[in-house]
Structure formats: structure tokens, C-alpha cells
Length: 437
Image 1 (cartoon, rainbow, N blue to C red):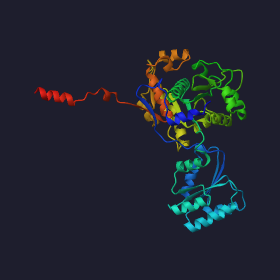
Image 2: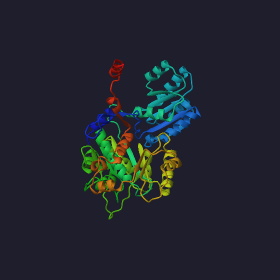
Image 3: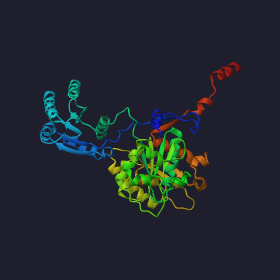
Image 4: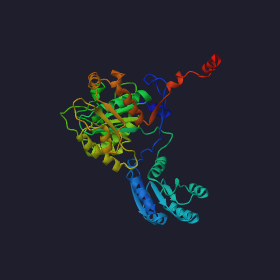
């Protein structure tokens, strides 16, 4: 897969074939902190509130691979500890000492540090001279208390991610609140729309190994796919990834499920992490099609994903399941936004429904899209192995999938006001009327 797509996605370059006339796509949020590699981090705090911030940062998905320990005592405790113990990859030290005493303690700490250890200082003085002195002594970063969890995470991410390298791709996890609600359909159509609008590489990873529909929906019958990668994740690299992916269009590829029942599928959470990490290093967007099941690996994929899309139908079982799922995600992903809710197959004939407003109020979450029941369009598109937009560009759901794709990519579509172009200058007309009088 070409890494040039990262540049396309970041610059906002748009192909004109499928974008409506007079439309542009723009970024709407700044780049987020990237995941931090597998390192050891030890923090020594003086203030209990700073320790709480570090505990909150430790629970964030971006530090999931790092080993973080938090201690009290500040710089003196750090010096005492490392006189007898090797230093980790990163030391975070909070200090409330005056400038000269602070520098003296950090000089003592430097004598104990092993080569390659980075030091981040959290201080309580906004002092440029102090900042320069710390940089001269090799301190990697100086943060002024109080710090927020995301501020700390972004600083740590900057230390271990080279801004000149390709950014790590975004993982978007799609899951249904109940089986048969159309989560796979939403996933596939949104991923396809993203690849067409942004002209960026997208991979759809089908993790429903026994019953996945990615191959059917894209009219493909791959011989190999994601099962081979999950069985031996340590063998997966960029070359093997290209061989296992099935290309469906210029920019979209699928990591298809085998969909056979004569073998057992014992997926480990660690294998999922390794496979998705390698995929996201090669493409800017990874859409993960999750089965409606609850296992340790499904939970980990959801908790570590950059975006989560929950698809639900407006009935009681969906409401209960969606609430349980969304409440869990909000609880564990405190530094991320809430999941995105898609209401699907709304206004199905002769089926009692919970009104969308009441459904959203019960979840305390407004749906990003409400897709109405359209059995003919969706059914024929699926039978043809096409996306909805490929089958019928006039279908109402087409724009909804486009809007969802742009929202997940943190872009927005700006359209010129057509009314302005149709306005006739009134000055000459008023002059004529005045002349007639």
C-alpha cells in the first residue's frame, strides 16, 4: 500500500469524480496524539493532584503498551531510588523547589541516569530562564503545573514519535448493538465513501471470521485474508500484508474473513493488536468490522480504537445493549469523545419502534446519522456486490454515508451558497424604476 496517501489525507486534496460541484473538504480538528511505544515510565510527584493526572493518563489507550508507575516524593525520591536501581526509558519528575535547588536536584538525578533515559520535569514556575537551563542540562520537556491528562499524553507522544515520519493511521471500530442491525453495511459503505472522497487508502478488516460479509459486499472471493495474519502475527510485515489484502478499488482494500466453519477461530487480543498496528502503519484509515459478540479481544479493539461507531435499530433490545456498551466505553475512554451512534433501518413498515428522540435521550447521545429503511436499494446493492452509491447515486443514504465518512476522518464538506450566484444586482433595476417615475 502506498504511504503517499498520508500526504493526501493531511493536505485535504480531493478528487473531483464523486465530490459534488463547488464542494471542498477541510480539517475540523487538529491532529491527535499518536500511540506511545512499549516503554517504561516512572513518575515521582509532589502534589497528589499531579499524581491523579498521571493515573488518568496511564489508563488512556495511547499508553496501553507502556508500563507506567507513579510514586510520591518528587526529585529527592527519584535520586534515592535510582542510586540502587536502573533507570527506565522515561522519568517524570514534579518539583516545587526554587530554581537553584531544583537545578541542583536534577544534576544529582543526572548522575544516576543511564544513557538514553529521557527526563520530563513538571514545575510550578513559569520562568523562561529556568526553561533554558533545563534544556541545557538535557531535560526533554518542561511542563508547568497544573497539567491535564491529554496535555501530558501529547507531550510524551511528541518525544517518541518523529513528526517527519508517516503518521499512524486511524482505526475505526464498527459494532452492532444487536445482531442483524446492519453494522457491516454501515462500515463498508462509510469506508468506501472515505476512500473515494479523500482519495486516501482505506483497509476494511473483517474480524467476523466465521460469518463475515466483506467479501460478498465487495464481490470478492479471496483465497487468503486476515485469518492467516492472526494465526502468525509475528510474520506479518508490509510485504506479506500486500499479499494478504484484496484490492477492491484504486484506494480500498479488504482484509477478508475466511468464512468457513470446519476450523476453530481462537483469536488472541495480542494478535489483534499486532495485526492492526501493522495495518495502520501502512494506510491512513483502517475500518474494523467487528462481530456482535463479547470477548477479550473485541473489548480491547474497542477500547483502543480511535473512533467507535455503534449501529442500532430503534427497539428495546438495541436500546439496552447500546446503553451498556456506550456507558462502558465512556467510562474507560475518559480522554476521548463519546462513541458515534448510527440509527439504522428506521421507519420499517409495520414494526413498532422507539422514537429516535427518546432513544437518543435514554443514551444521552445524539445519533450522527439516522438511516431510514430502504430494502430495495440496500438489498439490490448487496446482491450485486456493490456499495449503495455505486448502485444508486440518488439514494438518500448516499449523502449520509458521505457525511459519516467525513466525520470519521475529521473533515467537513463546505459548499458554496448557490443562492448568492443567482442574485441579480439591484442597483441598475432601482435606477430604471426611479427614471420611469
